[in-house]
Image: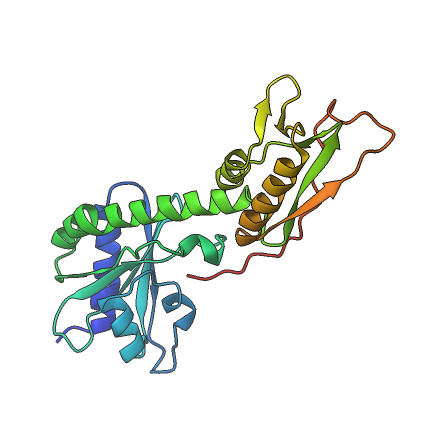
Length: 248
């Protein structure tokens, strides 16, 4: 009877050679029942059978396949289910937790002991799901990086009787301002709320402030100074930032 450790190691090595692109295989052996690979299983990007297996059984040996672009696949025995292996993608590092919200996990797959058939399943099923999920997470991360965090302020400055705002990068903030009367002035490069009707202007500012507060954005009114307002975009207050935490 073959050693199950050797079986998983050789399977992963052959599988790495059958996948498109340049892959390497790293086997993490069992050390007499004392190995614990929680540092790897915590990154398993799965909410189905692979997550169930890692939660039910101690992962005492496994393999990780790594593509030259950083994509990683986790391989383990199909414990309690007979022959074969389980393969799942590992979530990439250095992306904020919030970027994963609303993104469906690219759940792993069960494959036979034949690495050639397993390679077909990975290419046709797992990798496309992974690529789709990763693209969504990266898009979310990019959007979060360009958005003011909760607690940031939007500065409205007086320019004569009008209020002016530097065009925000976030489309949802720009939409709120447009809905409440701010109009883009191409010459000044600013959003302008006219002051022809001061009562209507005040009501628009209050309504916009309420909507922006729901988005976690405060409103600061900057009063006139000796400098001429409207010739340059007002500077927004420096937002508070916090270091992103790693997670799935």
